[in-house]
Image (cartoon, rainbow, N blue to C red):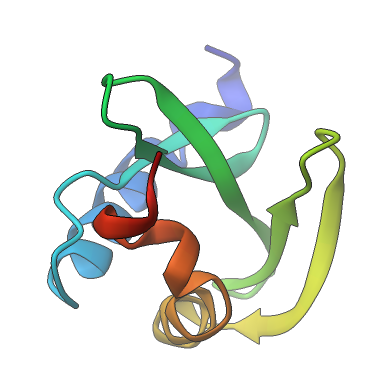
Length: 103
């Protein structure tokens, strides 16, 4: 784990907790990785699938991106404080996090 991830470990745990409080998201995990907060789900076989990432952009604000099927990161028009990121994540990518839609 890189040194830039060490400061994000607590933030990743907090983001994971806040997402899980919003509904049936016990299968959603957040990991500090390469300076980002990587948001993953688990498929029915228990394999983790990367869905999105929140990138710190300063002053406790984040930008949100989603991972395409080709593995590229595409920015979403969502940025702001942690609560805004969670709201945008669930509004825009909620179906990708929904347990019933995971293959």
